[in-house]
Image 1 (tube, one colour):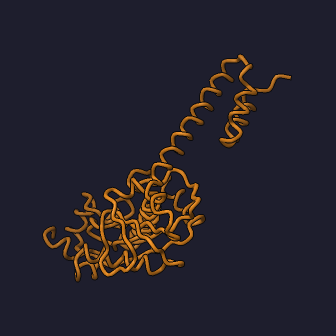
Image 2 (tube, rainbow, N blue to C red):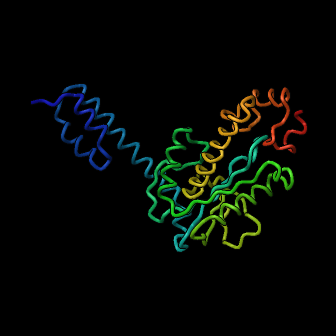
Image 3 (cartoon, rainbow, N blue to C red):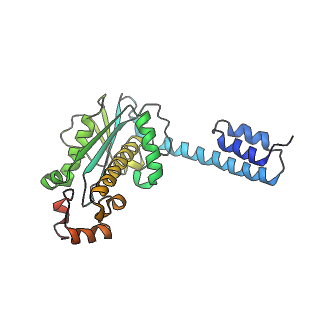
Length: 252
């Protein structure tokens, strides 16, 4: 009895990439246009998957170059530019045989994809550390020094401690571990990309929480950046306790 097209569709959609070629071969002789269209989509899925595997392998260049180090840690920060909220740093040690796909600079990913990858990273990482520096501390020591402080805190929370740091562009002062600064590192290293995603999701969730406390400022959507609704609320209601005074002194 001929299999229904809907059943074939379900089989193809449910199959993982290792089984897809076998199913394509099985259904190739079915001349129904509906089946042939499904096979075109299945082949495209395979091609897209292989392309992503190749892109991810390219992003392991630094991890492979420094493979002799036992624990390689990627570091990145989120929140240098906002007018409100903390700066957050992420530090992530991925396993040597890391098989996570779609890692990239967090700004290049949709919110949905970042949330999905966050869960995968937290499950598969050898260790994850987070560092937070509050607005008042940012005002006290400036945003660059606050960023370094957040990164040092994130590193200190890792267990095991790393023996190599892959950093997004910066060299962190007062850190004894060997460092490799990489320009646009969050798009060139899976470790830095993972740190970028963890830091971004963590900070975004925090700003959503702040939105329920200070609903006028639109923190859930603007995350503390200078969006029109945020600037308007700032002028109307004044600063909240989570605003960076040094960032808003010329705005109010």
